[in-house]
Image (tube, rainbow, N blue to C red):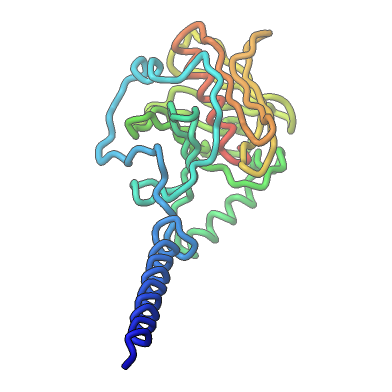
Length: 264
C-alpha cells in the first residue's frame, strides 16, 4: 500500500477522533449546570441555609440591619435549592450582597384544605381585594450574610374589620411590629411597634416589588423620608436613611419587607 494512502488514512482517523472529542466536549458543556440542556447553575453569593436557628434578641438584630446606604436589589440568578433554600431570593447590595430578601413559597396543601382555604378567603373581605394586586400575600424574610433570618414578615390572620395585614417578628417568633392598613381602600400603611413602645409608628406606601414591574415606594415619619425604593433603568435601588434609633431601624425594615410581600 502506498505510503501516501496510509498517511491520508491516518489523518482521516485522527480528524474523526478529534471530531468525536469535540462533540463529546460540547455535549458535556450543554449538559453541565447552567448549560443549555443541563440543570440550573448554583446561585452565587448566597449562603447555605443553616441547620440551626441562631436566636438573637431585638438589640442584636437591630445592630445587624443595613442602614444609611443606597443598595441595588436584584433577583438572585441560579439554583438556590442546592443551598437549602426555596422561593425567590433577592440580593440586597452589589457587587456583594449585604443581606438577602427571601419570598417564601406557600406550603403544599391537600385538595381538601385548599378548598377550605378558598372558602374562607371568599367569605372574608380581605384587604388584598382593596388594593387590587394579583400576587398572593407571602411571608418574606430578611436574611443576613450568615444565612440566619434577621426579620420575618408574615400575613396576619385577619378577621372581618381587622386592619392588621402583616406581623413582623424575629427568627424566634417574637413579634416586633404590625403593618396596619387604613380603614378605607387607599392611603399609606402604618408600621406600629410592638417592642420599643417609645418609638412612634412610621408610614409606608403600599407597593408590590416584582422583577417585571417598575415601581417606587417610600417610608417616612412626618416630613422625614426614612427609606425608598425606585427603579432607574433596569436597576432597582433601595435607599435607607440614617435612623435615629434602633427601634426606628426595625420599623424601617419592617416597612421595606412589606414591599416584597405580594399584594399585602
